[in-house]
Image (cartoon, rainbow, N blue to C red; front, side, top):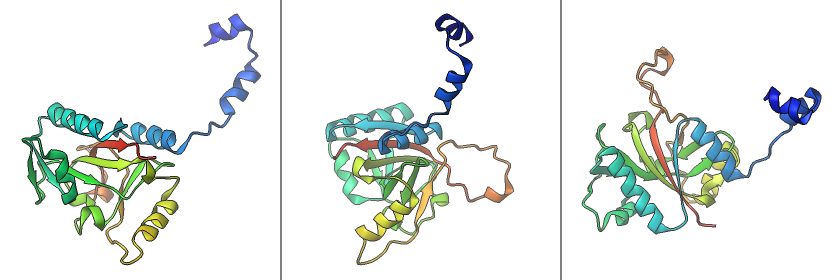
Amino acid sequence: MNFFKKLFNIPEKVDEEIQKQEVNLSLDDLFVHNFVEKGGKFLYCLHQKEVLENLSNILKENNWNTLTLLNEDLATYFSDSNVVLKTDLKESIPVFTKCEHLIADNGNILFSSNQLKSIKLSSMPQNFIVLATTSQLVKDMGQGLTGIKINNKDSLPTNISTVSNYKINKNQDNFLDYGNSNSKNLYLLLLEDL
């Protein structure tokens, strides 16, 4: 870096001002940046066909031939597949589900009982595949909770929680988190719908 400063004769004060400038990212860029930085695996899809291809690649990469579906309408993605679909949870079987919202300012994924039923997130298997759309991106948790309220006027869902860490740390030695970890090995398939 110093070589370029000397070569182009950039004063250090100008360099410091450039580093202090705030960068304004779009909601999707901000979410992806925060999500990937926390260890999430992100796959952008323009069409349903890409969702199917990416889903197939995830299953092959991890040698998964069985999935737990918490949303029955997701079974349509496997009509031409030999993947075994389950509805009961087992620790060793990954979960394929939808979500409520994607929180841009921190890279979290917001779920409710609409996706997780009454099962605590910490009781779910460690491996997750989430299907979301670009219209589910919101700026912050407040907008996410408002979105849940607007989309579910008749009956508000319960069990609202977020996955906020996408790296599984089995050597975690924090007694406060014992048995209550929301860390998940998570793949996000983000489908463009706007």
